[in-house]
Image (cartoon, rainbow, N blue to C red; front, side, top):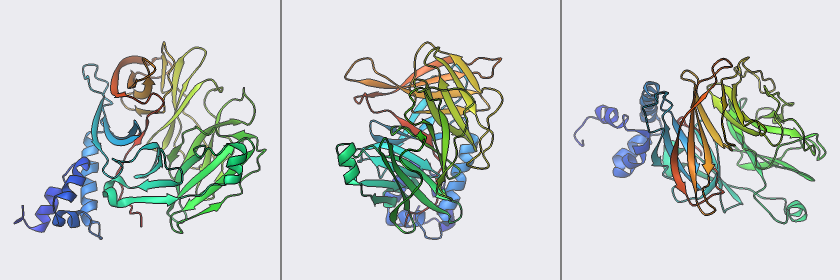
Length: 389
């Protein structure tokens, strides 16, 4: 390899799988410098090869998963072939976060926002493509007076959003405590490396996002489920935070009526939102796909349900993935056979449409876990050239 011309050396190395990039960079100084050149020529060529391979395997997308407080890459098999046994293949640990316990992850265009499990005073933003060198630790302060008065010092009651400002092309983090009697909104600008307070609405606003509600970033904006404040029978809807205007949208309708006891989960497909709904009364599950979203304050849904399935158990998914062409759905849930251990389970459904009910295909034990209260989080992953200065 040492005698190869540089262009041929690049051609060989740019075909390395994403999960082996860290090993390539640690092999020698020459390869490390080649893959990290300031002009990004090698990285661009490498990502082009990765995109071409992903196009060939579009029913095997790469996803980032947080399980047992650790972050790793996984490869999904969204084939509807019943003879294929393996649905989820662990690919590799992500070098950089392999020694850090993380309780939540958020994805936005190749970057990950990670909430540490123990360190409540710092956040991590990371581009996995560039490895450990692209970990950015962000200090954040708390309003101790409000916390001590209302929450007895509990510092993990914050909700986070991750997106970018289209006008300035900079990433931002939203952090808020939307809790009865405590409303605090702050936003972090990457360019200025600072937090500032947002005066969005008073504490008696008529809707609330629950503190344990996971969000989804799409086209630079972030979506949550919400409901009327202090109304225990309120119907749920969606709200969107626009990182360009730094404002929330008005309530956005769902294609069904969902009450607090029902199950709701968010995912995405290309430029559309995907919503999973399970009735607490009938256990019937539905998955709906929105039309292409052009504006963050407007949302409409396809006229027909993507998948409808009658299942004989209650599910509590924190993430799920779909293949629109094959009409395949993979749902991650926690199954706890006893009080000391649990399993990460992937449930696979095939079918769709009001005239063709979805059918349960199979389930796979993804991981045996010793953390029954650690729910897995996951998102599609596409590598990015963005560098965190």
